[in-house]
Image (cartoon, rainbow, N blue to C red; front, side, top):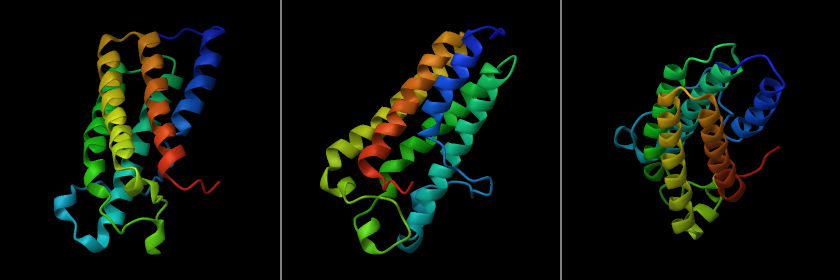
Length: 167
């Protein structure tokens, strides 16, 4: 359990920054679906729903870590959901579905110009979300905090390179 101390406010501040990179979901986000269920015309909606679902899971993690007694099982489940959704990302970016297509998307051309780097960024999210799930399974708050920071860093790195900064 995370006790009231100097550590708790520092924990919350550091997690807020890490999780902000992966957030951005709305409460009315539709559930993510596998690309096999989507036609070419709605793949952007499918990928946006997938990312919104990832953001919703981050909200669960953040809420748990800000609570008096985090539920590490809930954190583990949310990290596993993020992991499953992260595995879908590569199939959500067919050629011609970027910002240059005129579609309502923030996907930059760099995704298709640097496919190895984009694939590596996706792999990093898969790895860091799996590591977070494993850390949560231990129930060790310090390990979970470090894993959250790593996962937030993988989100931020991808956003910095492959997503339009519309702020």
